[in-house]
Length: 116
Image 1 (cartoon, one colour):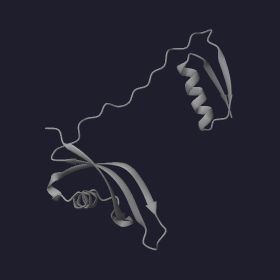
Image 2 (tube, rainbow, N blue to C red; image 1 turned 135 degrees about the vertical axis):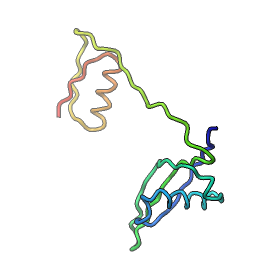
Image 3 (cartoon, rainbow, N blue to C red; image 1 turned 90 degrees about the vertical axis):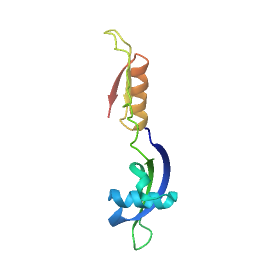
Image 4 (tube, one colour; image 1 turned 135 degrees about the horizontal axis):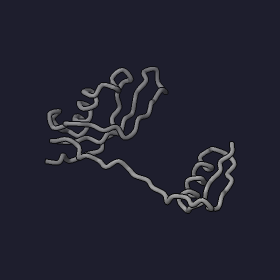
């Protein structure tokens, strides 16, 4: 039986933020459910709030209720093989824009040459 999945935001003290049982208990409390219904959690977002003396960790979790998560297929990516006489593009810079430009070149059959 596939579990139902809920998304919940919780705040924990820094010392408890990596403890799976603390995450499950706080998620159950936030959802208003008994702890026994929370069978698994999956971290979606992790941020630290250090504005106060007591550091808090804010977590966004996917929570599986009454069963395990369904298995996820890993993402796949493929691009066509480049021919020996493919056009080339020279891309200056390895920042986000340069890497994205190289990716787009590969997807369209152009051989990227990235210079830093």
